[in-house]
Length: 359
Image 1 (cartoon, rainbow, N blue to C red):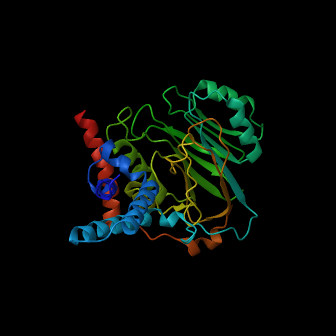
Image 2 (tube, rainbow, N blue to C red; image 1 turned 90 degrees about the horizontal axis):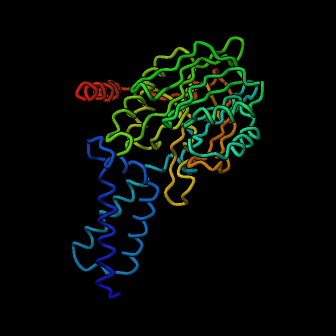
Image 3 (cartoon, one colour; image 1 turned 180 degrees about the vertical axis):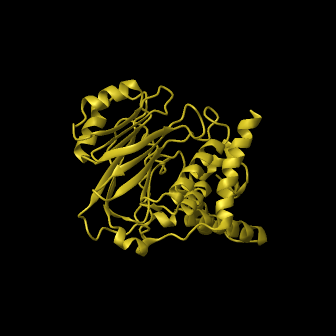
């Protein structure tokens, strides 16, 4: 390939990376725009590769070369800034355990409804021996096989099996009470709202969610997902109890929606400062990102987090263990949301209801 042709190919490749970088700034919630919230890790690598080739292979001869290189550098900085908080170079958002007298461990897994390797998941689950188990994409078949191998110690149970890939099963060794299954944005997409009795005097509020993704076969826009996340964020902010929000969010941790969710809810992200812990897609080594999340209020500290082995789903399970140390909560407090952030969250909810009326 001639040098001029190769330069053209690299330039086109670079402009595609620039275009993909700019797409999330478009203030529309169509799926084909919101999908560009996801691959920031991949785009960071591709932009860096284009930059490296451009600097090593070609001479800078005119202003167009400098302008193009400047655009690529700007895109790289933007892309890397998105994933930087989830690298080991960033500070922890949830600090490490100091006192492990009171702990709670969580195991969450999107099982992939059509997956029939039930025993693989059951064995992985038994190995973790977590206090709280959340399974999403669960139908009656999954409920039957999971409960068959479930320890009697899981006395708290909330079961909402469904055949539409939005079924949820929640099991707990701790007592659950004031439990509700709610359908916040659709009568076919449940969320679990329950309180957990952590100690004789300590209660924890749990929200388990699995909002629909912005995809042509699911929803043409992200309005449903965004609205459900903002509703949960508002509930978490108002809760008088420590809060845990878990589930498959169908959104990456660095998207504008997830960032607004954190700002409004004031919840902490276990991944920050520790790693991406990409849970999806388990079938791809390249196109992976973190979709399964655990957000906590500042009464908790991290003891352990790990991505579990492949269970033949398109998601990897995630295991976390936390200590409950409310006396240290002021050491890791997020600021109260601003009026502008609260308005943006409410606008997303109102936008959902407006769309619902127009259907």
